[in-house]
Length: 477
Image (cartoon, rainbow, N blue to C red; front, top):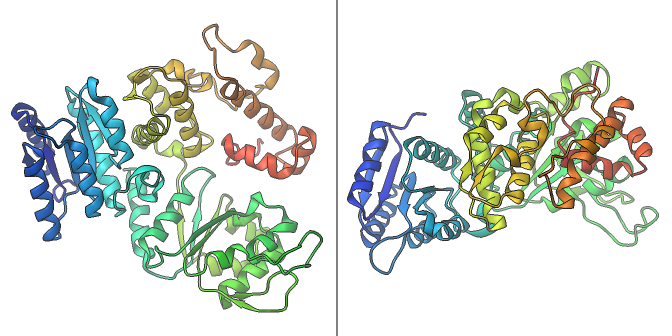
């Protein structure tokens, strides 16, 4: 990470702590400004805002002299909308305050005494977020804002960030490719947030999640009486995205007829709702994504060549998480922070053993699977540290894979350890995942046949596959 242009404001009333933090950050090449109390730091932030010379990171103790705290500084950063990313320092006795700070947009908190490695990791994550250019916001908006998720620090992901920056200000159609769960939706949201359409709507639709018979109506709307059950006029997703951006995920699942309709919309920016002769024009930017190689689908006659060339103007390829092991610690820490705030839990981080297990696992479901694993651990946690015992068995056992040949739901009965007393909703997740995966395998990953065998509809199967990270797995050969 090139740190020479990154400036950090360090606020702590303890001279020894302040100088120690400053020394460590200076050694790493950061520019550092320090303050001993709230009012001094507030003046520094105000002066920086007036000169449009904002700090990248605010590193502040929660407890400061006088009647103002580090939380007040974080609230000030939110109001300034400067993009400065807060990190809080706290003692074990004031973790509640740190959780409140994260509700206001702090990306992380460090417990005294601060370890150099943890400090550098937190600052690196904060600067990665600052690079996305999304202002810090409070509450649920802060947790869900596109800029709050860390894409990664490896060269490949940094190249993707550069591509996002390059294409955001244009109207160019962007095609994102990669396995399910690799972050295509996040990239699409980042493009939208960085574009001049950021104040308009962002509408997302996974084409594979909608039955073919309903997809056209969902995208383009329908007139009253267009088909059985169409009792009222309905605007489709394209009109809902007017003035903004529409993101069509899993475009590879669109039928030939739907591909032709999409080609017309991309070329003419117009369409007719189902059952209507009225041509509707739309001002919308279109982003698309595929979890299958479209070029190969074109060669096999499964995807229109003219549509492929129309959408493949600016391709962005996202690597699977298995090729980004170095990003797993920062991603896991980010997800843990999110879930700790949502659950109002005082969770500091992962033990070394738990992190080793997370880094060693293969993640067939990619980032989505990692997020589910971290959420499960946060739900089960009763302490401040996530240990390996809170991870699923297939993650913490290195010689066991969730897709190991011969694995079956019939083997699950004896797998729970005597101390694995889980909430029922959590305990049923892994058996359901394996049952679905087993059914998919014996049906050669044919979703309709699998849904019929499981006696559920295809849409329900699809949603469950996404929830369990199964939609990115390749058909077993």
